[in-house]
Amino acid sequence: MIKFTNDTEQIISLWRSVFKEDSKEDVLFFLNESKNAECLGCYEEDKLVSMLFLVDCSYADLNGKYVYAVCTNEKFRNKGYSSSLINEAKKHMNDFLWLIPAHDSLFAFYAKFGFETKLHSDLEYENKIVFDENKEIIEYLYSGSDYTYPDGMVYSNKAFPVGSTGLN
Image (cartoon, rainbow, N blue to C red; front, top):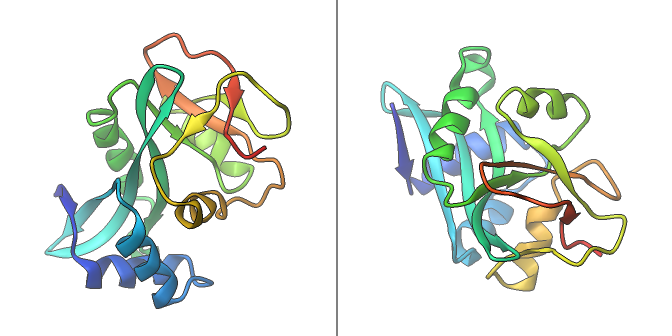
């Protein structure tokens, strides 16, 4: 079953089982300080086994959601849970979904869902992604990538020009 959740205990447990470098305090900081983030979770027998966060953002005159902290418990991988969550996220996206793949292999994974690489952080562009979050949360959102200059991928039915992630 897929639903929005605020079950802090299960979110922290799943998050830390996948993102082992993050402490409980790190996760609580994100949960408590982000103003515009919702957790979309996939449950199996009342246990949160896969999740992602949707964080409000904007780009030019478009409103969207940043997909963050996509993860699945190791015992439940390769069952399509992340795919189901991404497809469900599309129903809640407003004008677009945006994400920064953490490493190379994820670009092909997200491309299967119609995401295109359109946002970059190594050059200056007229349009940038904007969050209504405090500076520490914005830094937190960008910290999950292996890249110095990460590329962002966008899913949208709107005309979405190339632009910047806002990291410059």
